[in-house]
Amino acid sequence: MTLLVVARGLQGIGGGLVAAAEDWARSRGCTEMASDTELANRVSEAAHLRLGYRVAARVTAFRKRLT
Image (spheres, helix red, strand yellow):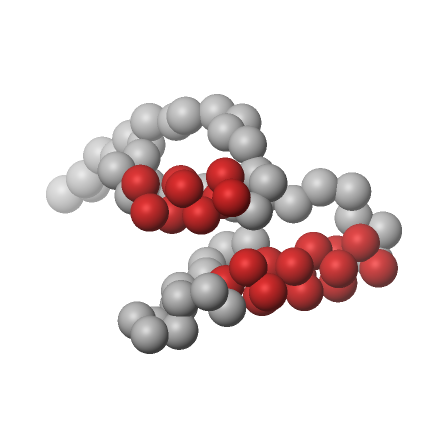
């Protein structure tokens, strides 16, 4: 998954959308789904855990301005 955003008032449909994406992936031979979230986004992390996803890694992103 690259991005899942649910508008306020529509919370609760995300799980169904993720389940549909997982079914689609399975039907095409995929054996794993992956997703990520910002470390500080506890709401997203909790949603992932409720949907059966588990933390695989914590990463630090680096960047350098080229001026």
